[in-house]
Image (cartoon, rainbow, N blue to C red; front, side, top):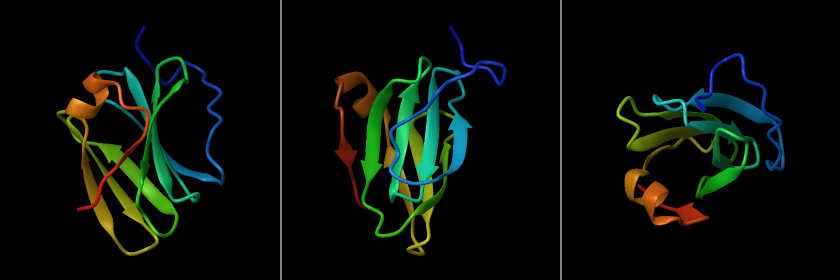
Length: 100
């Protein structure tokens, strides 16, 4: 199953408002950015896969790179972060943090 704009998912897991969402290029993942200072990656069924933490204030936007190997987040803390993902997705980590 591939995520499309017509599929409906009930995404619950953020502790505050969701500010943006982005589909992965292959349609297998959804990325959300929230005022709870996190970005989260969900599978196509709405199951939480990863939580990206490290921003000191709310995350305004998050996007997958065109090759799907990283995510960029932009925050109210006046920082942008690049999160490499390929190894994380295939190694099965549930929570992942990084600083750039």
